Length: 402
Image (cartoon, rainbow, N blue to C red; front, side):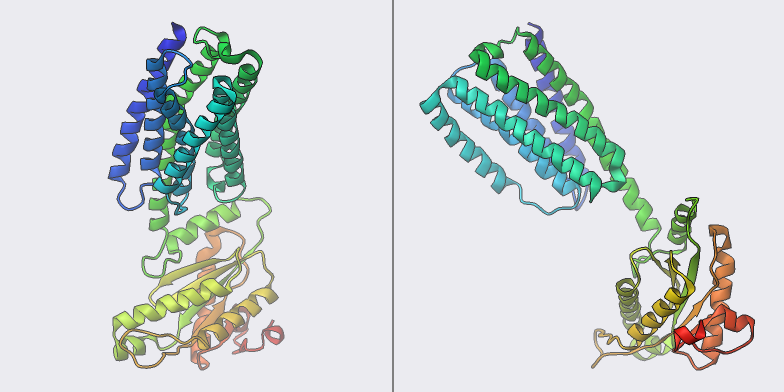
């Protein structure tokens, strides 16, 4: 009786949250973050438990075959939904229908060759393996593509591993005692359905939390990015520096200011759309040539900045010269203009600074160096030390200048 009530509650939870996931997915324009797939998984698992209740016990019937197939297909839907949540473009119906069709055929063969005990044991073994694979995927995600969701992913890994362990135990029980292991009044079955009901109650809100977390992160990312070039803006730069300097052993940083020479001519001669395309191309050059630890920023207009982390003065000098040379040698193709455009940039470098509160001073130093470079003929790299000594030293030879 207790297990029957638990199965009924489990069905209700799964079907209600399935409807909720469908509604959330409809509200998410563009990427649905896998909500439609999570909804389908819940729907299939809820229907499978409903069929199990209607069946009344282990049997060889069409209802049983469909129920087993839906049970196996549900974690496949969850896994594919998780991939979409993390931005992986994966097909859904074709692999799902392929799994369902293959498992129906396998059930018929196993039933015909080994009987009902083997078919029920097969389902438990397959579920244990599927959830083991899901647990491994979650752990892999913690180490790679889902590091920003470390706590949440560990939570999911623990819960999913519990399903894996329970299905493995069920497999052993079925092999050992036959179909008696599936009696609804059995102690293990009650524990199994209690845990499944707990998951059906806890996991859907946790998934909704992940969606809200991802949406919030996306909004924060949009607010921290320049809409044209997708580089960091001043707000994003400030937040990134706060995170960097919050570590006790954070290394000093250098500010490299990059200003496109004679940019107004591009706008005047070819139009603002051509100017926007040129700025995007310069942004691409910066992204390509900076190191992974550096921050790339559009500070406004035709001016950019690179914050060099964990580098010494000589490394920063070489990086600045590479950026200057790369911009000079980049062909910029814009719509409506015959042939490529070329532009140059003047670059100024600040002294090393050791805190987010010193950013304004570093920007003044880099600006002073940059404008000295403008006055000295443009298309060059200048350092703050040269400005301070009032020496117009070019950085075309970084090693000599530093």
